[in-house]
Image (cartoon, rainbow, N blue to C red; front, side, top):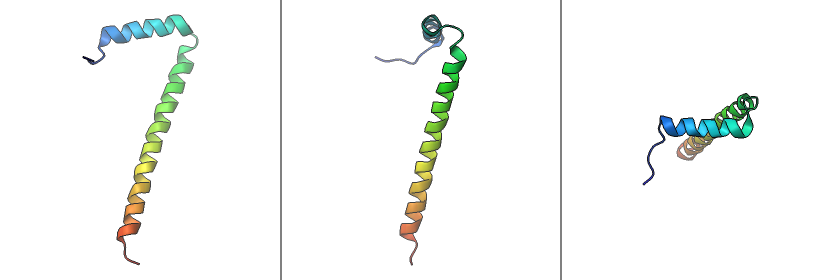
Length: 62
């Protein structure tokens, strides 16, 4: 039912965003989205690192 997003769909979305926010706001929106993705990736990496160190502590005899 739900397919992948192709080039025509992306162009329609871009035009709608351009109409709503205007050309001046697009760099700010792109920057905000980029920062959000970067923070999300950082948070998931930190979670993996925390789980790894916790598992190492559990398996190491004291």
